[in-house]
Amino acid sequence: MPTLHYVFDPLCGWCYAAAPLVDAARDLPGLRVQFHGGGMMTGANRRAITPQWRDYVMPHDRRIAALTGQPFGDAYFDGLLRDTDAVMDSAPPTTAVLAAEALAGRGLDMAHRVQRAHYAQGRRIADVAVLQSLAADLGLDATAFADAYERLAGAPTQAHIADSRQWLARAGGQGFPTFALQREGGALVPLDIGPWLGRPAPWRAHLQGLLAQAQPTVAAATSAMACGPDACDI
View (spheres, rainbow, N blue to C red):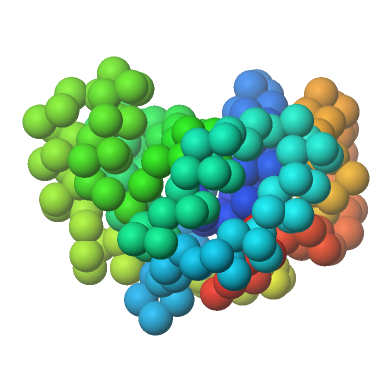
């Protein structure tokens, strides 16, 4: 089956911008969407929230909201972005995505849920208790999720991130999100999502057209509106 590879990070604002495009692709018959969590803010790249960070990211967040209609809540702008005790760490939400996928094939649902929790609800998605609450929102069994999370935390998550960075390189991507289409046994064909942000229905039609072609011909892997592999504009 043709596969749309999606290299992302839960704390990448442009990945949040692209979430409706991911959903539109998931609704397309005959296309599988495979996620790859890239670990943008892990290890030495974990970031504490500061007033300077808030001032830096807010214009970018406003731009994403205007471009895509994705919601950014007051609890994020005036709550989380003023919470100087909070730390942005991509590893715990990535582990939660892997756990949801392992349990019920719902990794992308968890990815979207943690994005909404962060940007719309201003919640600390690096906190395990918050992630357990989000798993419950998806109807996942609490004990099974906790067990899966514990099993996949640490080295397995880091191995997934390393593998995702390899997918990023294969796709020729420079940051997150990166999308690439792959036919069965075929090469990765990078897709530029810039023209489609905020336009999920035309994006879906675009993908349908690509799937109907013998060999899709598309442009750059990553839009200019993207997070870098180790940092983010928003």
